[in-house]
Length: 167
Image 1 (cartoon, rainbow, N blue to C red):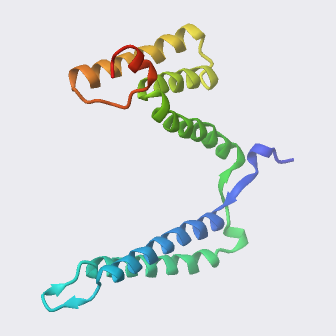
Image 2 (cartoon, one colour; image 1 turned 90 degrees about the vertical axis):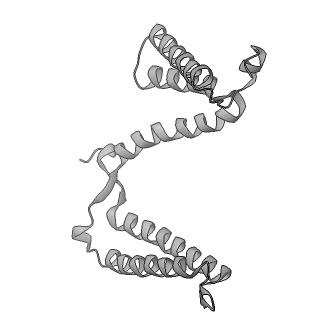
Image 3 (spheres, one colour; image 1 turned 60 degrees about the vertical axis):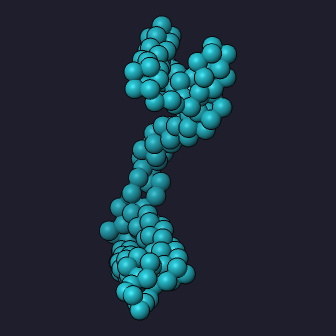
């Protein structure tokens, strides 16, 4: 009996169709916007949207060809694109990363990075608290010194840096 982790989450045919439709939509947006700003040949040469319009047409043509090929994939050739276990691993990294990026606005990059590194070391790496606290704080301090002090590149700061007068 097949394990739940070994079952396909998405088939190759489904992904090919989905990605092709995204590219087709992108090509249509390029063509529409190029036509809006001018995609014709003017008296003084090509208008601003002339070349992008034709690039959009090429994207659309290639997308349509790929879409036809995707629909012609036979069931016997439709292997899994990703298995459930693989997709679970991707989501386990992607969701915390999205949360990390969102937290940068409120906590600043250094505090958010410290939490992010510590969470991953604790959750996925199963390191002891001494290791994940020292590494996560050490990396954030090193980045602060490197960017703020040595390179003079200000990065987003939060309430902790403001309380310490580092804003």
